[in-house]
Length: 433
Image (cartoon, rainbow, N blue to C red):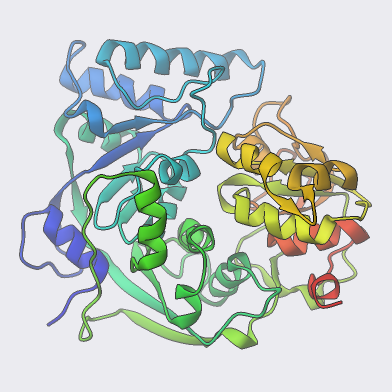
């Protein structure tokens, strides 16, 4: 009986020829990532369990990327950074990206890819639920808690139950105005926020493999919004082109066997997909954009690990070029590299950054920013009773700041189109005219 990609990677990292869903195995980690929110707790548990003077299992496999509460005067947030710096110094860790320096990167999930830590066939654990993003590279990547992370810090491995795999296949080609965000919101709406609980979500089909690396990252990023253990896409030339530009480290490509056993399989016709929003207050509260045209908005937010990549900003800039936004619109690049690309990339002789400025948008520093609310001085934070359209990944009450705000999740195309009109708008109106 064959195995899925997820099963093959876990088997290889457990030193086994094969595994089956439900097996409990020791899995060796290739990378452990943590950030400013979970790092301090992880380090405290590590010292308590392994000793004050204990050393991490492999300095080169620990990656620390502060990103959540960076551009703030909040003393508690600032203290977390101090704790990271102290641990990095004690352990002589080489992969630390310090705020306030030229080495600062921004949002961890995008920085992991840009800095070459995402490699096909690897196992990556991270103290953040959206660590599933890295599965777009054909690797097993999942979020864990502080206690599990502390155990990995000391031992380099983790006790893992092999998940069942769900297969989502998209045949054909997506319409021009449909982005990966519309696709993942469609699937979450179909199966619910608990529909993939502790399961791998494997994406496949011609339409998926035509997507850019960053669009694939969006699909895997929000696997956790369906309860998924991990998202994963088979590595191909698109993957390898990206990886080879970022690292010369070895990798191994795994593919699901033709006779692999799936818990669930569903095939979609990509050409029939439409722009989608998730209405307040849940990522599975799906609606077609065409059904929400009467929803008036107070602000638009384009950013986060889900919607703050250069691909996302190219889409938004395409619609905003030569026009003015009607509502407060916040542009927050995920990383410094994305920010630099905004100054380099041009549409019709105008840089993306100039397009956003000329459209009247507000520009923020690279970080998670308002995606998870943050301290009161966080850029773009939602206020009471505001109706927000956002490219972020969650819209629970209080997620972007105020518990009285109403957040609609959408693609960068839909967010940009809506920013121009002041109400939820189908991007096809602007793209196809």
